[in-house]
Length: 410
Image (cartoon, rainbow, N blue to C red; front, side, top):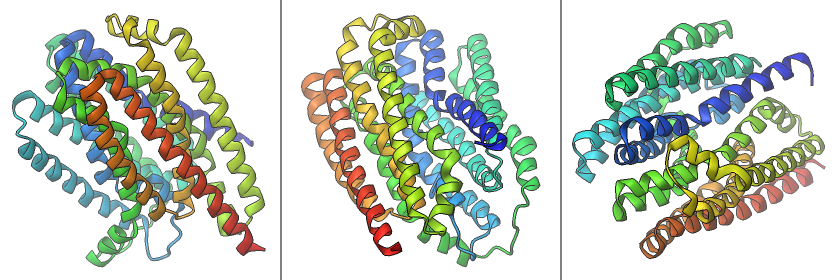
């Protein structure tokens, strides 16, 4: 790799890492300061906000970075993102009314959704910057948001014992960084401004629908046990599951920083029909993910529970088996996320939606049945079975699609 690639990779790893552990950090703070029950509300709220975040981010950064349609400009994506954010906030409000949430749970859900919407807004600017091969700037921005957000949330909650005020302060920090850092660097990347009309807006909604659908279904599948726990178990059990499933997010993190530095190169290989190099880079990405994933699982087995006990101030020793079941399932999750990004770059979205649609039904039935029968153990088993199902079918789709492209290119 040249100096630019090293810098991009370095900052992308740091920024993505700090961003990916946000739910972990917030949960540690809230559990320590506000107690297990309030932490249960917070972790459920964060998981639900992540589901609605898929509406706000809609097509996702991978899609925007690899989009080559001349009809769509940067301003089209930015204006569309404004509409998706408004839709997201309205959707969460309606959801809270339907579920009859009130008081703290209602406010937490709305605020955490607003927090995730600021992330969605930043993603549009990140895509513009990344297309200019300045992924290091994206990494720096994510690092600033994460560190400042964590510090301000912690200080505010420590002083006030009020997670509502702490979340509001964190949202304000995000907005300020978007205004004074993200927009500034996006302008340096020469944002393509064009006259905006509803025609482009509708066109983009249609064009990005399958990318949105697979993201929405994907987040639902990941969090299906949490939603079942909200209906069947107490808030303190929500906290326990949230804690033992949190390290599995490390796998998502691995996939993120492994794939993002190579998106532009993958796009170029597809454009030039260089399928030989495409196969090589895909094989390398899958191999690296597997090796790093196995290392993470080994580390989790040796010191996962002791570290979680220290971080959260709880005795989680009796949950080691469910924890390890989740960690093994999370390796399948890592493959799924990596392959999904590759398939989005190849514009293979419909098949993903079908698989995730089926997986969502399985996850809903399995989670409710297993949790009702075995509690946290059941939640862990249903999570891992679903991850395995998705990973196997995604590998099959990727293998078949690359072979089909190679045959066409001959």
